[in-house]
Length: 201
Image (tube, rainbow, N blue to C red; front, side, top):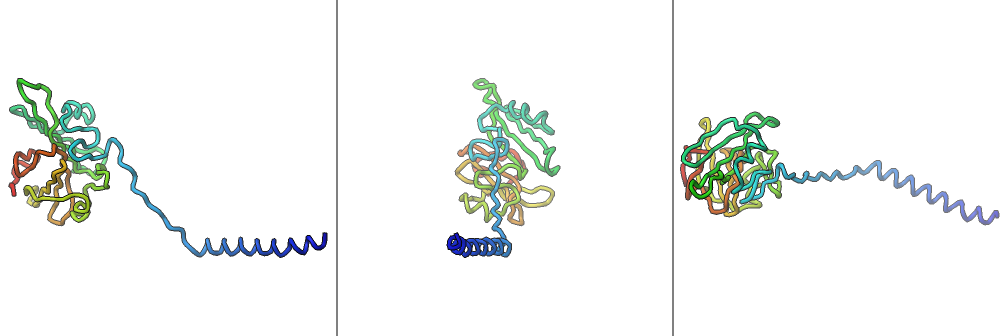
């Protein structure tokens, strides 16, 4: 029995020393904090050429009113509609805008052709949202300058892609707005309804 005790005692002391060393190491070495970006939800995900949240390209524009309520402003005529909603949950100047067209005599449903969002709550799968830099955007998209416009004397450039998404960049090279559209709709080839004072490049 004495021999067994003599054998167990060093092992017990060694284990105790190891535990104290491990504890000291854990206290002296700070944990590495891993921060992961939350996945965009169905209400906030931007899919180029397809959707922004629950608004879908070529979908019924009436759904926008069901989802967002009565627009804060509208401009309609000749089968075209531009509706704008200002955010209730973020900065007061954040907005969602929808441009829709009706093919009168063929399809009486007003179809969403473009969606514009300025809230950082909307993001692509890569994490691109307003507030990011143009350098961040260029990591994921090949950009072509399509048009410029002014707003309150500030100048912005619309950079398009062939993937059904365009980005509004301010003079500080920061992303201020995202436009989702059909892949065939380029600002320099047609109408940019959100900025009637734009200049094509």
